[in-house]
Image 1 (cartoon, rainbow, N blue to C red):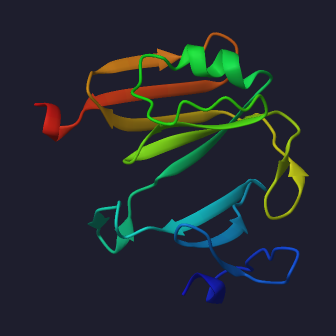
Image 2 (image 1 turned 60 degrees about the vertical axis):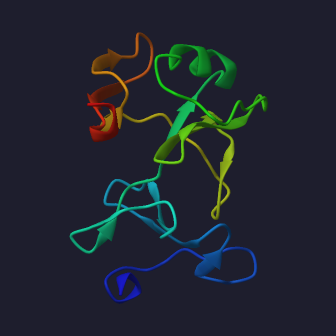
Length: 145
């Protein structure tokens, strides 16, 4: 179990394992980033004992602008919130948040750090954001081949 390997972060009620649309646990990585482990068996395919990554935080200075920057990806969420929005589909989403917005469960402000991620999508593309240190490589998802 992960709690045997590193300390889990707790919410305001002192819970380390939370239940909201799946089971969540939060912890710090070696760089001090908050990581969330989510188990949603109904939408994730189990691979090598782990479930697919379903969410990746992407802080920015303007959520609406970031949504426009990511318009090459499929989005089913159609988020309208100016400070927080999911962008993606049931296979995976970016969690777009304004820089500095409190990050659950610690309330520490979201920070912009380099992110390089490979995803599966309907097209193949390599996207390097012109402002943020974000790089996305999209590979064609098997269902689209």
